[in-house]
Image (cartoon, rainbow, N blue to C red; front, side):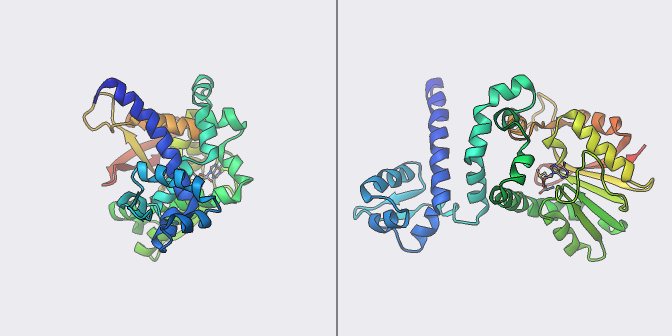
Length: 312
Ligand SMILES: C[S@@+](CC[C@H](N)C(=O)[O-])C[C@H]1O[C@@H](n2cnc3c(N)ncnc32)[C@H](O)[C@@H]1O
């Protein structure tokens, strides 16, 4: 592929991604699976004139989500079948092409200039504050996070012995998926989710646990706030307790283990949350600022790591 084709491929990809968002939102995979693959039936189900719907359907076919046969009937491809309603990929595609996400990414440059991220520039608030006023988006967000979290929760339970704790608090635990999975493996474990409905981890984290879990929390925040969250966890942790953080640890620049697109992942964290991805040294610095010492880092099969820290 020439360099010019590569650049055109990105632009084409941006359009294709948006089209996949329409496919997911319309529930096309389910409509076609349910046997409504003719143009008329699909157009009716989408409440669209057939002569207009055909352009959209051929767009879906063009990017490989479905195929049109000689009689004008559409069937699902393998990729299209992955986008059924309620599937993990359907949630990912819908969130990444949601008008809210699009508006944040449209402000990517302003967000880098200010350091506060595109979302803050576009909406004047954080995505979490925005979702307080958009319960439908919040529900979809929680389902998306929960879907991602199930597999990682299994790994966390397998690679760390939670049998040694009396009580765990999942700080920013969303819909409680992580604790639910851990409780299946450790039925004796007592746990509680602490999220926005219960308080604000930038102000205080409740006492009473001997382990504080933070999965995908620190990368949502810039350094000052990340240190504040860790300090609040440190203040709640008894001397024998642990702060357990599950995050992607970026390998140092130039390392062969470095993921293919760390800069894009990092920019997405800045754009949507105002946060950042970090290397091990950067994490250790955050913990030290909060009076915590990193005792152990356990790499998990998914590529995430479990960082175990103790009060200094
Ligand atoms: C990226 S999600 C991670 C959810 C969950 N830990 C997981 O990994 O599936 C971040 C979570 O932090 C919560 N959160 C954001 N700001 C918060 C605050 N100030 N106090 C408590 N929770 C907060 C959000 O509501 C959200 O559930």
